[in-house]
Image 1 (cartoon, rainbow, N blue to C red):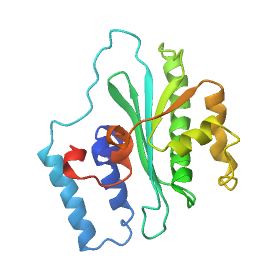
Image 2: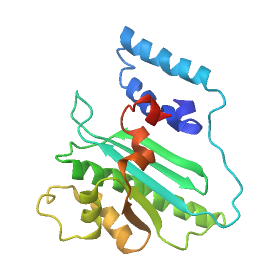
Image 3: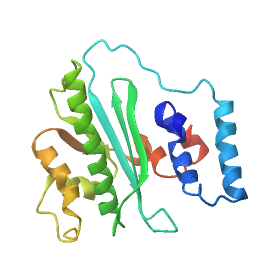
Length: 202
């Protein structure tokens, strides 16, 4: 858990999934943990690399969700990755607190979580001398969720979404973030929400 939180975002999803069974682990859970450890043993040179930028770097975010991916609770998983210049400085993979009723809702909640982290990082960067003068680009791969952020009237099927998640609209209107579409093939946060085929994972 310590490694996944500090230097190895590539194992975050797997570690998070394995920790659900800490109270009552079975042999298959122990096998999964050993597989994570073998992966770490085989990739000791993997990690985060930060390069000195030639210009003031910009904070950039990627957010994603899987819809109802937890077969026990039917809750979706949110994932986000935030980059500053060339390096990743924040990432998360966690189960959503409510049961999303559509892919749009699951992606919207994930975007809201990423926005909260981006707002906090913008303040931190401002305090240490890297003010973000333009909106933070946030990339998602669900066009319905993006339309929901950009157009508050687009709400026929989303009236039930908890008010706390509308925080993202306010930050979009204040130019703190600018949400845009990115194809699933280029979605960096995909690794935080689901197991990926080997080639895509690499």
